[in-house]
Structure formats: structure tokens, C-alpha cells
Image (cartoon, rainbow, N blue to C red; front, top):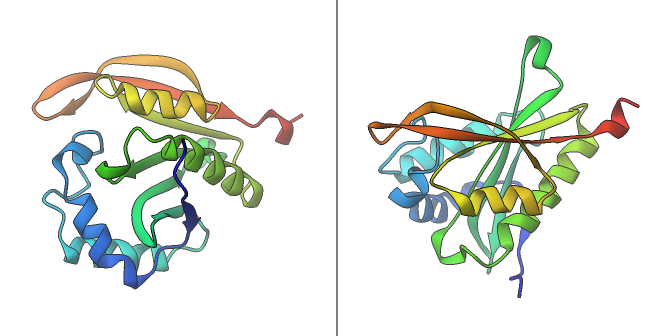
Length: 172
């Protein structure tokens, strides 16, 4: 049974929950190294400040039980990849394996595509994260390749699984 959640913009009131949930090595293990670890309230304040300064909605707070418990983000490509966006996401560990993230990604992708000129959304998942691969599959993404030993995470090279969702309606 899916748990109830809502997607919304981040606010300063989310700083304590953001710091509490994102200060988790299991989450950090599946994210880029630019995500600080340990994750502090100062890091949360900087993130909220960054999000508040963005000109388009491309970070979605996942609220569960009246508390910020995850994020879904879209990073626009540049130059010849300007109609692409990279998807990233995380969810607080107490809510893993409940079907929340698959549905949240579906909703965020739909909203993001409705207000942007993006044609293609792609995501990169480390080989040791099958749950994240399943999230993308359930949200309508297709695996388009595996970059062998392309990422260096936790002092080892790992394969990077690449998934994409292409909105052909916008170009046909």
C-alpha cells in the first residue's frame, strides 16, 4: 500500500528535517560526492537558499506526515543538451520500499515537463542500487545503457546505469 505524500516547494521551515534525514551515509552512498556528508543544518540552509534563488521549479520537496522527507531535482543541460535534464532524488530511509518514490518521481516528471521545454530526462544509478533502478522503471524510464566503471564512489569504480524518458509528443 502506497503511503500518502505531497510534492511542494522547499521552505526555511524544512531545514531541521532536511538535516536530520539527509545526514545518512546510506543515502550519500547513492548520490554524487558534491552532496556533503555528514550533512548539517548549515548545509540544509545553503540548499534552501540555493532553491529559493532558482528561476524555475526544479526541486520538489517530498512531504510525508507533515515533514520534509525527500527531494526530486532536475538539472538542465546546456548548449546542445539544453532540452535535456538530469533527474536526481533521495528519500528518507524510514520511507524506503513503500512505493512512495516511484509515484513521486512520476508526479514530479509530469509537472516539470508541463512547465519546461525539456524533451528528455535522464538519470544515472550506481550498479549497487537496484531499488533506484526499479523506481525509474516504475516511473516510465527505460534503461539506455551501462557505463562500465564510469563512476568513482567510496574509493572504488562502479558501473553507472543510465535511464531515460523521452517526451516524443513535444517533438512530433
